Every structure is written in C-alpha cells, then in structure tokens.
Amino acid sequence: MGRSASTQAKAPDVMSGAYRAVWRWHFYAGVLVMPFLMLLTLTGGLYLFKDEIDHAVYRSMIEVPASSQQANPDQWLAAAARAGEGRAANILIPARADQAVRVRVDQPDGAQRTVFVDPHTATVTGVTAYGGVTETIKKLHSLSLFGGLIGTALNILVEIVAGWAIILCATGLYLWWPRRRTGAVLKPSQSDASRRPFWRDVHALTGFYVGGVIIFLAVTGMPWSAVWGDQFMRVMRDTGLGRPPAPAAASPWSHAKPHDAPAGVGWTLENAVLPAHDHSHGHDPAAPSLNRVLQTAHERGLPRPFTVSIPQSSDLAWTVARQTRKAEDARSLYVDGVSGAVKADLRWSQFGVMAKGFEWGIAVHQGMQYGWVNRIVMLIGCIAVWLLAISGLVMWWKRRPPDLSRRRSGAPPPPPDPRARIVVLCIVIPLSILYPLTGLSLLAALLLDRAVRAFTGAKPVAAS
Image 1 (cartoon, helix red, strand yellow):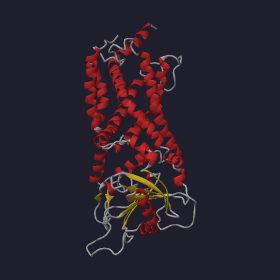
Image 2: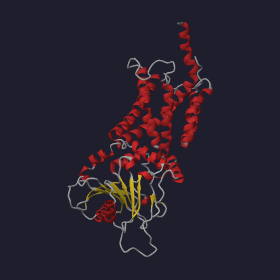
Image 3: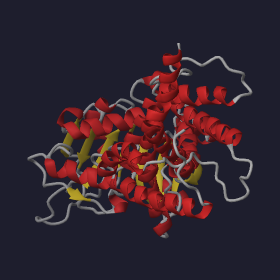
Image 4: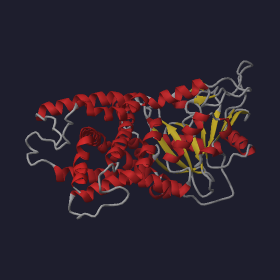
C-alpha cells in the first residue's frame, strides 16, 4: 500500500516539467488566438445557413411570380446595369422559376451592387450592396472586411490563427492524456459543479470529442489565407496536380484581372480565363450575348443553378459555372459570347489529385458536401470553440492568484528545467515548417513569454 502511494506521488514529478511547459503554452495559445477563433466560428456558424439568411432578409426581392414566359436575358443585364449604375459582371441563374436572377454590377468607383431582376419581365425587384448580409459575414469570417494594408494584414492573421488552433488542440490532447492520473478521460469525473474539476471536465471532454473537427476546420480554412493559400495554389498549378490543362482547341490559361475573375468556379480555377475567339480576320459582326451563352449552356445540359461571368475584355470567353453542393458535381463551361462556341467543358474528372482534395475540403468546411449531417457537424465544431473558451476562462478565474492586480497573470508557472520545453517544440516545430507564418508568430510568442516573465518577476517553480 505504501509503495503504491509512493509511486503515485512520484508520477506527477516525473512529468511535471514537460506537463508545465505544455500547459503554459496551451494557456498562452488560448489567450492569443481564442478571441479570433470565437469570431471566426461565430461568423462561420452563421455562414453555414447562408441560403436561409439570404431568403429571410431578401424574401421580397428574391421571390417573383412563376411564369412560363421569359424576357430576353440581355434585357436582364441592361435593367441591372441601369439600376446598379455600372457594368453587369456576373449573373446567378436560379434553379426555380419563382426566384429572381441576381446580377453583380461593378460601379465606376470600384463599389459593387447586387441587383435582383424578375426573369419573366426584366423588372428590377431590389438592389443591395454586393452579396448583402451574408457577404459581410463572409468577409468578417476571412478577416478581409477592410481593404488595403489593414485588410491584407487581417487576412494573414487567418493563417496564424489557424496554425495556433492546431497547436491548441495538440497541446490540449497532451494535457488530457490520462497517464497515471484519475479524472476525466472519456466521461466526466464525479465532482461538485461549483468546483474547478467540473469545468476542467467540460473543457477536456469538449476538446477530446470535437478537437478533430476544430483541426479540420483550421486546416481547410488555410485556402483563405493570403500567404499559404496563394503558395498552395501556385504549387498545384506548377506540378500539374491541380488545374486541368487547357484543352487542345483553346489557347493556354490566362490569369484574369480582378474585374474579369470568373465567379463560382471554385478555388482551383479562380482567375483562370480562356480567350474567346480569333480577331485576326477582322471584327465580329455581332456583339456578345447572354442569351446566346445561355442557349449553349442549355444545349450542353448544364443544370441550374449556375453563374455566368461576363468578362470586361471582349477577347475572353464567358464562364458558366455550375453552383454545386458536392465537390464532385463541379462543372465549368467556357463559351464564346459571340458565336456560342464552347472553348472548354471542365468536369471533376479532369482535376488533379491536389485540386480534388482542395475542393472537397472546402465543400466539407462550408457544410455542403454531405448535406445536413455535414452542416450539423461543422456547427458543433463552431459551438465547441465557444464552450472551450468559456470553460477555459472560468478555470483561469477560479485559479487566479489573489494578487492578480500586482503583475500576476495567473498563467501556469514555467517549468523548472528548460529542457522540458522539448515536448512543446516537438509539437510546434512541424507545424511551423508546414505553416511558416505560424512559426514566425511562435518566435514572437517566445519573446512575449520572456517579457511577461521579466515583467512579473516569475521564476521557475521547482518540482515538488
């Protein structure tokens, strides 16, 4: 009995250094990124219900009387351009006859508007800022609401936050691992709800059961980052494992300017455009026509809904992209707006391995790939982040030092032996290599840790 007690008493000492190091970094990671994670998961959770929010807010603009008659589609564009006071850049063709078409109008000053048009009468039913409420939610989610340097800096922050979210989950798993301890493993421990062990159990079990979803959201959110996402796209293009090769009948892909970037084609083909026709034999007698492009889409059997992107450059093909929920249903037509000739018809089977994984991850991230089950699982992940943040705050509050106001942060004490930080480095170094901005932020966090210890006068606590 005495020997057993002695073994149990020594077990925490053996791992106290590494445990304290991981615990300290878990604490600081939570303090640094949890507010941003809470914003990202709040907006992400709302964006899972994009269609429902859109319909609730803009019902009067979206719903139109169903009719078998249809106005000339080019009249839709003309009406939208007048109402939006700019150039029609793309148009969403809905799946149902009782819904308005949505036209994005680019104004001369760079602003954008969404104009709703009744397809049966070419009558404008409403005008909003581009994308309306859900576009604002989307920009908040990607931290790109502000333009210029501020917007770029905030967008870069997405990559840093995603990397640290993975570190949070990895260090949390290390802290949760039962070893020789008793307490919460796969079910709550028996404790008074007013005591800290209750909140520890809530925190640990939430992280254990939902941590995988949080890591998945963090990893698949990387395409939205300004640095890692761009580099990943470049590697896919250069290796041939992403964007399909340009068809033999067309010239190679060109990189579109922002105003000509196709909509709805997915991340793999964003900014990829094809020339429409050869101007070497003089000017074409006809002007590009939406009606002609829609006829081609119908003849090719492209199901609705889909988005038609209208290039500003007359020598570029119009892009018709199917709006899908499952990644494997993706399809894009590149159509000459004058003749209606198809320059390319791209389908899921033509994408490379990296591109397929890329697009699949985004579809699951947005809760679309597997229907309502997918959406609910992603929503649970968003709610879990808030529960982790609240329970972590409660635990810190309950264990805060009495002299908190006198330069005491209440952070876990530093380990007695600097070598104990090796465990932390084994967790963060691989992530820092994969996500360089996370590595740079780690260096900043190390400097912050030294500054905090110098400011508070904290000293390593010897193992007891």
